[in-house]
Amino acid sequence: MRGCFRDRRAAGAELAVQLAGYRKAPGLLVLALPRGGVPVAYEIAMALGAELDVLVVRKLGVPRQPELALGAIASGGATVFNDDVVGAIGVTRSHLDAIVRTERIELQRRERAYRGDRGPLNVRGRTVIVVDDGLATGASMRAAVVALRSLQPARIVVAVPVAPIETAEEFIHIADDFVCIETPRDFHSVGWWYRDFDQTQDDEVRYLLDAAHGAKSSAA
Image (cartoon, rainbow, N blue to C red; front, side, top):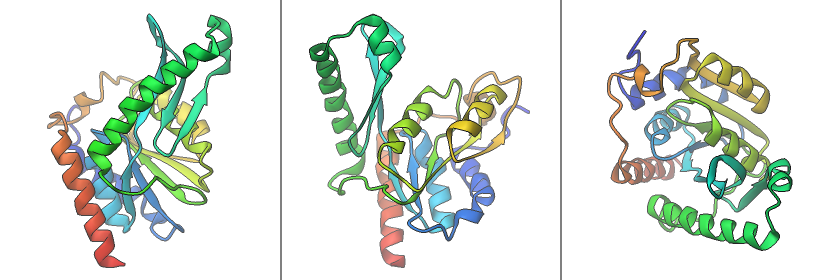
């Protein structure tokens, strides 16, 4: 049914109910893919009493072939390469290093914009719930999960309000747990499932992250 979620925060509140079993997981961390995943993740973090942060992901695109990804970089210093694509197109090491440098500059700019002076992201040995406002192809979330694996969390849970059934079935095998409210065959788009799907602004991202950090500090 179109518009089954009022907005991102309402969708997050619904997801939090399904994730309640993780409330007492050791070192629980909720990571949002900015920007649209942040309002969803905020409600989950507040409901579960968890720390909230963002995971910025940048795909390493093939020049003039943006649909192909050489790999991805993510918050926390993770760098993952798709060796099959790298080998198939014959990218030199120097060219690959140049692509990584360019994308890391943009990643660091976005991290500064959202995270300010907070310390480096630490997921080792923790249960991590990775959140977005929905999946279509799942490319960014797939890169996020692969990047997170290299940082050695104890468990990766992918949680989204909506995803097409084909993508959902893929993530059942990619993540340690996959939680999704709606998995339609007739998907249309992520925004189709929200009555309010206005673009999330940088100011809202910073406000919600600061609010979550303040709430967590007060509870400690």
